Amino acid sequence: LFCLRCAGTLVRSVGECALCRQSLRKEALDEVLRVREPGAVQAEERQERQRLGRFGSKIFHVVRKLRDIEAQDPTARAIVFVQWKSLRRKLAEAFTEFEVPYVCLEERYDASS
Image: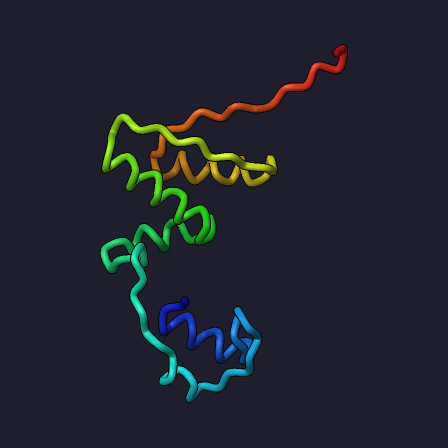
């Protein structure tokens, strides 16, 4: 789902749906079903979302989910598995910027074994 502004940008720049690649036209924006799904970005979160935007929407949702968990239970802990070092660095940068406490465990290889 996209907000109306992003959908308009998509129609003007690409001219097709990002999901199914169906051709779109400007008039189609009036046909877009406007649905507010649970967990969608609230108006008061817009500024934070813009700050997190440089990290991407997936990292935004990871940070937000971790904050939701902490709000429900301040003693809760979570494990986030990351496959690539570059993504781990990006996630660590986002956690640092948005004050999400974390510990990074790196796998170590012993060549003598």
